[in-house]
Image (cartoon, rainbow, N blue to C red; front, side):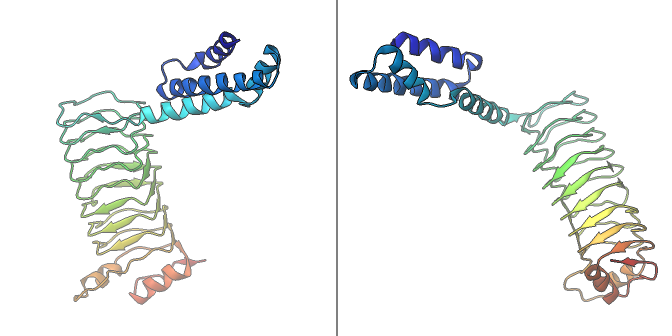
Length: 287
């Protein structure tokens, strides 16, 4: 009967051979079932009854094993691959699912389309003309590097850090930026189209002449950023702050007056803050 229990477990665990955590579960479960079977035998149960009661005691074990296997494989995919200081221009990483270190690497023209790069680091790398279209870039670090003409079409950008990076000619099209940091960054020649900015922080960032028309801003802060001639024409702004913090000059307030808000839709708090800085709000819709 012990062999029958072993055969039963082998059949349940067969699809997950090689998954370490599942093998550990199988070993522990085997010992527990053998012990339970012997207890039932001592209570006077015949072999067949003891076997059935032993199996019933563990419930839907197949579902439990599948859940353990899925979790284990998910964790295995999170293992960090180190490509730091590598020469990998025009490499094909499209569709990969891997947390990686790409610090100080040459990646110009590489393709990361639809890749899951959650938690990856690209600090100090050359990622000019690199394609990140459709990629999951949650918690990625793009600080202090060159992203000239990089493409972020429909990318997932959550808690992504672009601080102190070059984004000349970079394109963000149809992307949602959530809790993204854009500190000390020159965005004058960056292209944003059909994007949603949620909780994004622009701090000490040069946005001069930038086009944000028809785009959505929720809980965004433009702290101590250059905003001369920025266009929010037709944009939606909710709980957006343009407050500069402490300043001794009127240069910032003069820049606010040059911003175009024609046709923009904004909440009362955003409107009140801009009105206090004498922004031109004559063609704004307040809701």
